[in-house]
Each structure stands twice: as C-alpha cells, then as structure tokens.
Image 1: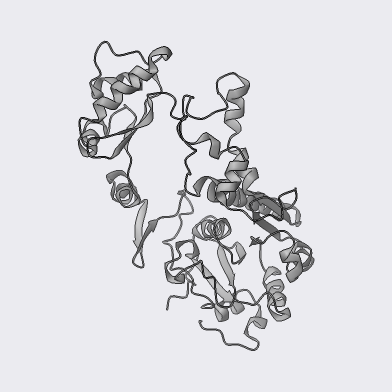
Image 2: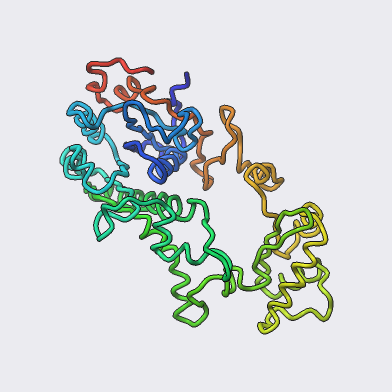
Length: 382
C-alpha cells in the first residue's frame, strides 16, 4: 500500500498541517496545502463518516497521511495535542465550542504550541446570531447576497453547485488566512486563530459589485446587468443539438468579431443599443439554434470572439487546451484536476493516493516525533 511518505516538493515543503477530519471546505483546504507540498496529517474518526464514501476515491484526501483517533476519549484528545505541538497549521470544522469541549480548542493547542496557526472553518463564523445554527452552502451564499445574483431575471436563482460558497468563500479564504498567519508566526513566534466563515468569504467576493453599485453601474437584482446575463452579448445560448454556447463578447472589438462570425444581419441592433437588446438577444438565439455545438465550436474556437462551448466535466478534461496544459490527469485510476497554481522555482509533485484511515500511524509517530501514537495500538499502516 502506498504510504504517502514520498519526499515533498512544492512551495510549502516542510510545513506541517494537522487536519481534524470533516467534510467539504476543510478537507479541500487541507488538500490544497498538501498539493503545494505541505505534510498534511489527517485525524480520522473511528469508523469514518457515512457521507465520505470510499476513502480510496476521496480526491480531497490525496497526498495526505492519516491516523485514527477518538476525540471523545481522553487518550484521543491528548494525542491530538501532541500532534498540535509539532504542527505549523491546524484545521478544524466543528460548530463553535465543540473543539473546546473535546479539549482540542485553540487555548488547549496554543498552550502546547504558541506559534501554532489554528484555522477554524465554519459556515456562519465563530460568533453572531447564527453561529450555532446548522447550514449548508446554499444557505450561506443566500444570506451573503450571492445566490440572488445567479440566474435569469424571470426565474428562481440558480444554484452554482457548492463551488462559490464552500470552496471559494470557504476553503480558499481559509488557506489565505492560514498562510498569512503562518508568515506572521514565523516572523514573531506567535500563532493565532483564523476564523474563516463561508458567509464572510462569499460576501467578500462581491466587493467589486459594491463598487459598481456605488458608481451607478450595477442594479441590485439579477439578470439585468452587463455580466449577469442581462446583456445579450454576455449570455448562454442553446444550439441545434440541445447544447449551449457561452458568449462573453464585452469589448467592442470582440463583439465585432463575434457578430461577424455569427453572421448577424447588417441591420441587427448595435451592441450598445440598449432599447433593442431584446431584439438582439432573439437574433443571436436564432442564429445559434441553426447549428450544433461542434459546428459552432469550429467557427469560434481560437478567435477573439470570446465564445466557448459549455462542457461537462469529462469533456473539459479532454479539451485540447486543458489536455495540453495537463490540467486534468488520471492518478491511481481516478481522473482529477492536477494541483494549481504552478510554480517556476518550486514545482508541485504528482498527487499521491488518498490516505486510507490510520494507514500512516507509525510513519507519523516517527516523522513528527510523537511516539505516544503507538501506545496501545500498532495501527494499520507503516
């Protein structure tokens, strides 16, 4: 069985991360750190989670190592503190107060390791009226004003999977906070707590729109603005075979190329003829409906018309551009995205297989100098 102990490479090589297993944005944040070369040790719970599926197929658990500890037992929480004493970063995603009740909260961990950066990943944050409420991505982005931005003006908001909330507003902001605090800790020797709330991150993502509104360039409703589908030249259109093409021809020169390649009639409404946008949208829709996605792709790809086919995940992985860049690759039989971004001086390594629960107890005990991990058990791995 692969033990995930290959020499680390990447800009975070040498950084130790302790992840208290959870679901969603916390594990993804830890995966990103592992992709960048950090040594991520995941503390899995006995029996795992019924929601996590086959550990061997959990891409967000790749390039990590695992030990199983029961945090509800004194021995389990004590071993977590032993690991926290050796870590640079810690990630937990419990409801506020749970880590404290388990004896592995910030005060407990920082007492053992004053330079530790303790990352807390929640939907609502550590404080506020909703801090103790249950929730999921769709509720967080709805409350932050983001869900109401997505979709047409005459339909219910469209759910952007859980990418905007959990992973953009959650995981990525947690990683930025962890790395910023790590920089501070290495300069001063002082760790701190990073409170990453999905509602905060999702709200922060809308910063540019608040500027647009202040300048009178954005209406606070969906489907009527330049980049939310309100403009006929920034929209999605159906093709003859029931597929879709995405149009983003904002600038005049790009729109001119788009209109030429789409073969719009000479008397078509102009791009900025706002009063005739409905007429222009109908004309564009009629033209796209005359050919298949593949035919339109042949017309537009490689041009400056800013038009692209709407692909599913497998089609995206096979697209010539993404294939040429190696954006997707099969690792251990699972097709998945490769690490991003890319580094010229400290390139990242090929992702290692997802960590099976408790497969690395002995190796972690040695590498992190925590022999107590071996007391009373031999684990299941090296």
